[in-house]
Amino acid sequence: MSEQNLKAAAPSAKRSTFSGRLGFVMAAASSAVGLGNLWRFPYLAAQYGGGIFILVYIIIAVTFGFAIMTTEIAIGRKTKLSPIDAYKKADKRFGWLGWLAFAIPVIIMPYYSVIGGWVTKYAVDYGISLFNTEIVQNAAGDSYFTAFISEPLTPLIFFAVFFILSSVIVIFGVQKGIERASKILMPMLIILSMVLSVYVATLPGAGEGIKYYLLPDFSKFSLTTVCAAMGQIFYSMSLAMGIMITYGSYMKDDVSIVKSTNQIELFDSIIATMAGFMIIPIVYMFSGEEGLKSGGAGLMFISLPKIFAQMPMGSLIGLVFFILVFFAALTSSVSLMEAIVSMLIDRFKMKRLTACIGVLIFTLLMGIPSSLGNGLWADVKIIGMDFLTFFDFISNSVMMPILACITCILIGWVVGTKYVTDEVTKNGEKFGRRKIYEIMVKFIAPVILLIIFVFYTLSAFGVVRI
Image 1 (cartoon, rainbow, N blue to C red):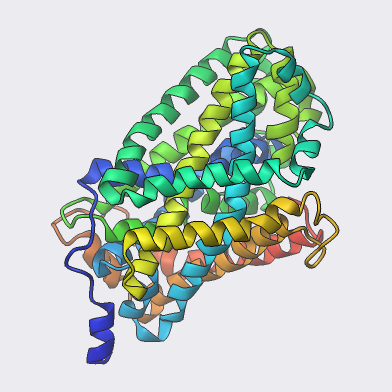
Image 2: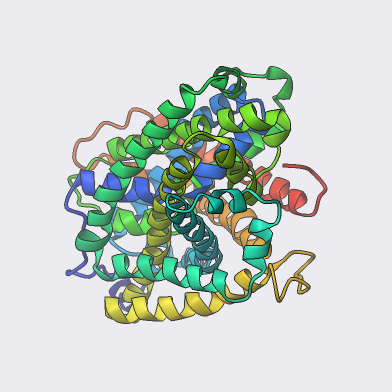
């Protein structure tokens, strides 16, 4: 690398850091725990054999997920740079990967915040329902959600409110904004999840739903089950989005990467599993197995409101649930924005406030198509998809597997796994899964990622079902 490039890639002496391992773990875990955990994980678990899906997911998380997360965190801490320059510093021939890592959160941020706005709207509705129970019955109507997202103005307002809240946290910086918010929101997420899980478990008839969720149905095990679990890892652990490299660059050198990664995985798995406890038993009780086949927005915004309308204290339970989902969406939104802001600060030497305002304006403008794509612009399609679905497809099904796959090739075959393992063990830390890590990064992960890429691309066009 030339002297000029080295200078361009050199980390800033004034780079922000997390206060310690707790701050890093809370921020990274808050990033990992998002909408993917609270609605995508439960409906995938329900569709793909309950306990067998959970078992496959855990195995993949502690092998494939651990390898990718460790790699990204180590690259960030080693370079003290955000992804655009971190990949270039590792090997200048792979500098373009940094721009791909930059593009992914840029694409995800607007449509994710639109969905965050939907969650905000429902949280507000259920808050009002404590004083006006008619709202709960209205929210249970077949056309309530469709009518809401078809409106030209209301979804945009809630989208803007949600993202402005995210921006305020990021503006305050790493320790005073992201770390402080994560230390508050992450414990609240866990407490609310536990409260709702325990409450649902005590409902009459919940046992059958819990059995459906936990007991493995081996007849449903297939390659599709494995691919669904592998794809969920990206959603659940915030991988291949530039986030973990960014957060790793804020990590102090004396913080254990292995222990931190293990704790992030633990938090992520606990929240995802409890999400299933919250959702699957009550949907099974009131709607049976058929009710669980409704995935994504249909499960969260249509099926669950129908159930809350039938439950004792439905207004309160609905409010607690949507507050929980709102917190999860907010923490992930913050991490997506921080990944973008960090790269702008590193590459273009912007001040944090300037970068945040720029991202805020860009996101508000770019979120308009995803919002109006369900209403005024519903007839506008890109390869047969509405705007939100297309942006989700191109980022999650195409760009993220490609980024993760080539990152594995870079570390496994170009610079060598020693590039990461030296960073992990630099303070005498033991790397107990070192051999598994090296085999995973060099041989298994690239193949898995190629399968995910092909599988999800075929799924988007209806060739296979997931």
